[in-house]
Image (cartoon, rainbow, N blue to C red; front, side, top):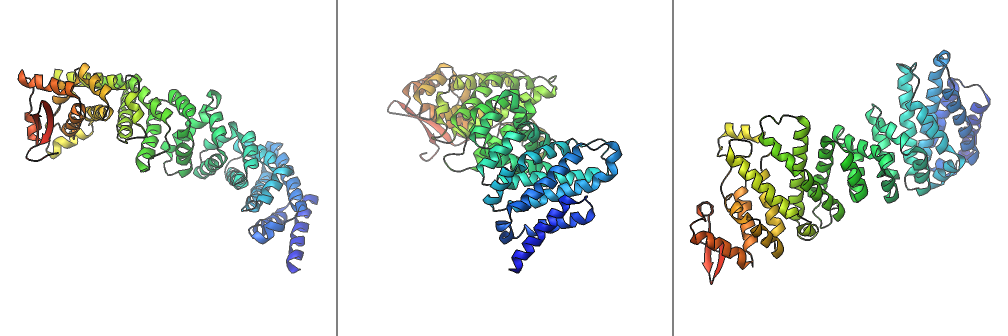
Length: 485
């Protein structure tokens, strides 16, 4: 009975605020209400009238703040404290309480809260110093309230989304305050589902998605934005396609890093990246691969060109990793002209590297000083990874094996069975490529035999690495020296 009396006392005290001019004593009453709402027993039985009264107080605060003038600034501080405390009470009332979530939505708290958050975000220029700090506290508490209101409640999520997407959410993610951005990211993550992601993919809404990716780069410690990208964005081909085409090269690099982390961090067969996105990456590599060739020129100092080249390099790394997973991404073996593009690019890089001393030239720098000078090169391992992709695309794939032969790629790969400090493991990837090209393919084996008879095949590099090409029953076999593979 005492507990009931206490509840009645709190509700009665809250009602006093509505009927009197607000002053600091009323703020203490609100704080008592906020504290009481931390107790689940109280949350579960707080009556509708208490929330209705709070809504009237809250609506009055919102109206007063939005109509204040420069002459009212001295009285604004108390109202901002009231706004923050109302949000705290609302935030506490929603914790593990679907009843209160639904009740607050039905009473109209979401609409009033969103209006007040819009105003607090665009607070008057005259609000400086202490007023600005109090406004920020109210903003943070309001966003936390929306977050708690949406957890596990689909109707609330949909209502918050309807009133805040895309404008308010984008505004909050642009606030120069890490906590505000973190809370806003949490609200966005909680509200998202497949249909909302598709809304975000529309051209007029794409800025919100781009901002999330930007935050992954500028605030990497912010887990919510990373989860938004990996759990939602990467599952939507339309969104990835639209933001990728709209992004700057530096933004694309951030997105590719997130895809790489998702790919490498998930050892299961399904890493959450759909086939359509993988195909988009392959097409993007084909479309932009020529940008890497500009790096051979010493005059290629344009930062945008460098970023475009780095994007191609990242795309190649992703394609190598994807095609190393037998099963999930092996459909890329049949991606139109991907193999042709890769072999032709390998030819160009190889020719450029031999034509003069440049960034693509092979090197034998193995002392510490030389290693440091070459480690900063953006194309370290690029040629090796091109050969790795060729090897993967030809694995147990007769048509691709034949295509490499038709493109005269076999002698090209043989010519790279040499140690190159600018391309670690290039000889190993070349040997894997040769093995995959020869496997069950007599025509490719005949090509190599023709080279040997004409004296054009140089197996010294293979021998140095412990391999030899052996003919048995009319078939060429790649073997380790002294033992079978």
